[in-house]
Length: 369
Ligand SMILES: NC(=O)c1ccc[n+]([C@@H]2O[C@H](COP(=O)([O-])OP(=O)(O)OC[C@H]3O[C@@H](n4cnc5c(N)ncnc54)[C@H](OP(=O)(O)O)[C@@H]3O)[C@@H](O)[C@H]2O)c1
Image 1 (tube, rainbow, N blue to C red):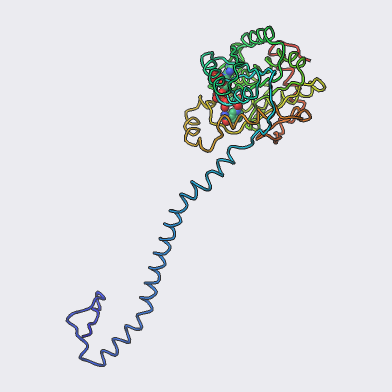
Image 2: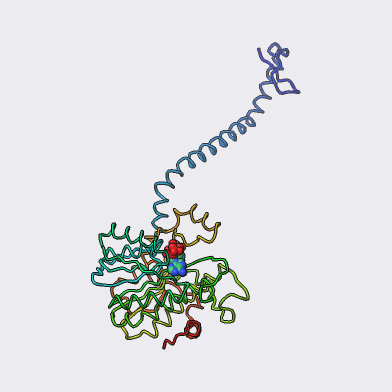
């Protein structure tokens, strides 16, 4: 029995038996044959769709473990950046690190302590600093980890720190100007300097000035100024250094980090043939407490911490510039990932560096030739 499709619905009609009429059978079979390629095409299209779906699902299914086990470790290694491979020992050497109670400073202190140095943690928060010192003593076995009070937002505190240090320590081989603030709401230091410029640049400028003779006496000696890639966005706005006419907290950080680069450049020029060399450093983008003044950045930092350097990884370039052998010819240069890095046009401007030096001396009431 052959059934014919109903013309309206295209379904087989049980009431229309055409097998009894041979002419209708022949015509029906011919029509069906004619229609077949269309149904094959439909079936083939459906098959292709299914295959595409299955292969996408398979690709997705395979890409997750591929990403986790193959790509992510490579990404992580890339993010970690350069490593200081020097095995230099620092027994008998004296190191001062500012802002060493947390983040990059603490890990720099831990590394240098592990190499045998006497490390002075120069910090504003004594409780946090004592806890960090205790941790460093326990992990390195080095008991010569000393905590000293230093608030870079107050020139009185900086002078007191230096006075005590010079009384107690006969030598200073490595000074790491690491402490820093970022994205502070508009505020001023005890001496009326805008906070970023005051802490990140002027505070370290004064500290270095007060300790420079001890560094020279202890030569070979080194100074490491922890700057940032953010210096590329900075300008030295001599007409409004304290941001009183216009203030943007992101830019204020950039300006202060450019000041670190220019200070390094000018200091290196002035320290030629003294045995004291100086380097500026970008530590990388590091998961630390630095974005504490920005809720948004804090959330981003925490969410994407896997793709940021750890503080220990961030400390590598500071450690490299402090200990690696034969780096003296590179004095004044800017480093990132344990190698020289590109400095912005502003950061290479000698006239600006000289002017900033003079203005800094004037603001701090010092004479440093
Ligand atoms: N993290 C990054 O991605 C990154 C990138 C480029 C450059 N850097 C630079 O790396 C350096 C270290 O930053 P970090 O990431 O380790 O940040 P952090 O974890 O916030 O550490 C900053 C340190 O500076 C100290 N500090 C702040 N104000 C001070 C003051 N007035 N007097 C004395 N110490 C003060 C802090 O002390 P308290 O704990 O008492 O506040 C802390 O110990 C900074 O110079 C920063 O600009 C960081």
